Image (cartoon, rainbow, N blue to C red; front, top):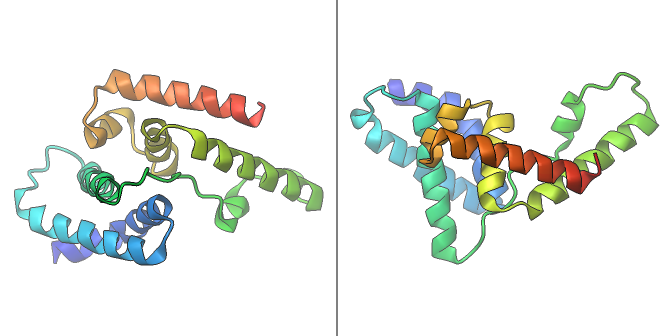
Length: 165
């Protein structure tokens, strides 16, 4: 079944997005279920004009924005500071000191991401975390591609300044 394939392909990225934005396993589970329910309901109307990933992320983003509005919250950071990221970080001189520096940098980036406005955080996450291109991000967020470019440039400049690079 097509939906099963979509679910298997996107369940982890959607869970990560929901978990980061809700900061709660139960809410992330509920949000993921609702997102995939909406994907399933909308599958018949998917015309293939956009990439499947763009369409699924657009459904997720729209649901999670509404989820937070209904609860009167701001969206949380969408940066992963887990050990998995530390393990994937290239380390030319692996050693305790280098790992501590990498971990400290990730902590500073996570703190800086927390301080970014929502519209900057999501652009960074979609580009660097989920590897969507500019036009896909523009479609997910329903903004012009120039807005994506400027938000990403501004977000990266703010992050560099905040982490002292």
